[in-house]
Image (tube, rainbow, N blue to C red; front, side, top):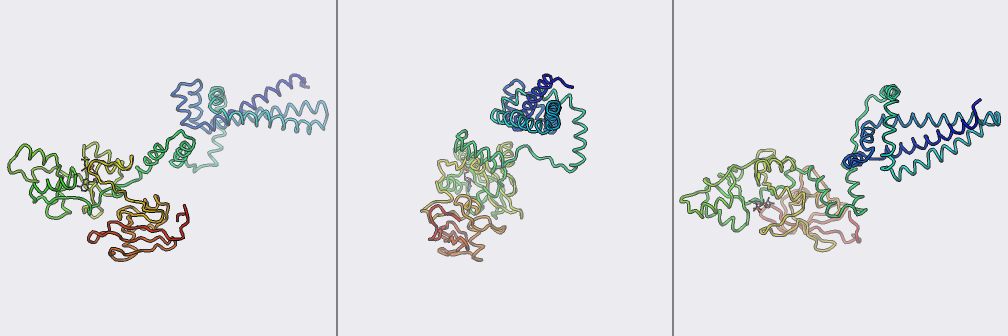
Length: 422
Ligand code: ATP
């Protein structure tokens, strides 16, 4: 028969080990890979072992589970054996009650609570012993792993961290004050940046200031002077036939050095063409590599759709960049809580996002001007109104430039109560 005092020592040892494994489980599972990487960079003791463990989460979990079950079962068996030797058959009940209570409090609840509050400290402390144990238990792990694989053949490898999770961390960071509002906005812009295509940020062809290659050089000086642009596309005969870009500096240099008989074709340089569906992050890299500031955007039919400059792309990251020639006219201007003036070229998605409303989206248009034409079924006249069903929002055409809508007024219905958007 087992000596009671030896049994008590083994029982207490099992209890301590049970607490050790439970605490290890919580600390090692909850610590995230980014934190582990930081600890390794800071050369914290135990961090390399921790990194090894986190590299194989299945092995880590199985090691801890084997250890924990081993000591829990051992503790329960010893308690039962001792209790039977003292109280006979009734000892089984006593041992069950006592072991459950002690294992639950000292072996589970207390160590797990402590480990969840100081996961970093506990993880570093237990990483080495758990890693060594995982080496010892490796053969057993392989057998269990084979069994597990047999039941989960089509296992999908999920990413450790998703874009949505990172965004949530950014939100939490802002709420807790570790990330400033501007940093929050910029980090969000970075995510949006990689999902944005050229068409969304280009200056559309209707707004592009261009010049015919046959025009006299003096005309270009007037254009540069009036618009303040540095580069203008040059076309030959038809607007769709862009043959190059004219830079004000080259014109200035030609005039300053009094070169005789210089014409526009002598000064233009080759235009760089890009499809309107190109991702702007790729385009930015290309423009940087080619040392270009401007690209001509071509639509799916190969015709001229607009231009895009490095500034258009950078604005997506840092917000509106105003230079000394830009006239400050935001796409959406608030007149009152109920009325907004909107540039017809603003994308419906952006208007919805900014005003927290739900104007209808459709494949046949992207801009709010396009939405009006789609709803009316004809080119509108100044003053025409479209009422959006359900929300009751009215869109009134304010300014037309020939057949193009320039600005419109967005008017919320009268019953719109304070702060309530639809
Ligand atoms: P820079 O700042 O190098 O002097 P810029 O002021 O002429 O050049 P950017 O700063 O590259 O032009 O772009 C500012 C805005 O003007 C962008 O939205 C761009 O699309 C637009 N833009 C640039 N050139 C033209 C042009 N010829 N016609 C119409 N819009 C243009």
